[in-house]
Image (cartoon, rainbow, N blue to C red; front, top):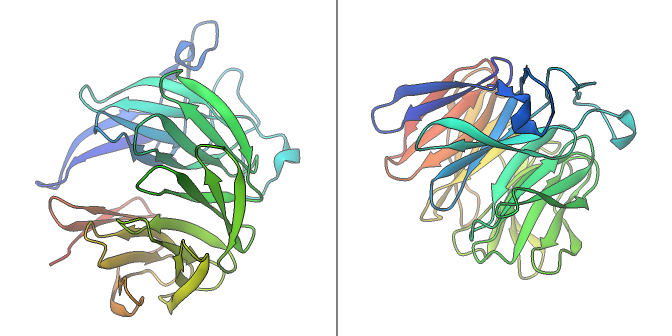
Length: 299
């Protein structure tokens, strides 16, 4: 909750709030000398494979020694301040570590082996690679204007980054750290992979479409109109259904993953922006820009 400066933790079975964490941390946690605290602005989260930690990006930092804060329209020449990713200990439910990254970090992803945390930096046009063992950023990889969604394939060989200011994804080889481009269509925002890793699903914010990409050929093999400004995506654990929030339409769509046929579209809220699938309960969680959360049964 970047505007509320909090991270909220819920019990997914009982649908109850467990704890609200403040994004305020001591400056010493950020490697700064002197007394005092700083605030973040939590945006996105990803979990370690063992479920021990959550990694949370902060749009900007606020406090002594920080500024100017970022904006949505920007470039590396804007001179916006660097930010941090927090690590949340999920046993103690507290922020216990922070990693410096680029300017206005957005999406976070963790590699399947838990070795690296990948962070797309919206305003510095690059990707931070955090080494969990070394507890710091070890690489900064140029991506292009407005990098956003990240999907790591199940075998950990590559990651795909949606470059929203373009018409392509960037494929990052996680062994050689080299990059290539995959054309998908205008304004790619979010990307998820099928359970087998054979296919990618991408929301095209500028085209009001969701597309399916065959990783072997690099070609779009299916496309569907879901609503206005499709944003975040989630896929069911069995890979049979895809879910997308349509930001400007205020709806959520469920698609058949094989051919992207729209199975259902329902009203959600004003500006639904985030979505995830909770496998144990078969529930879909939707975050609304107004600050509310909607939970739907997928039965």
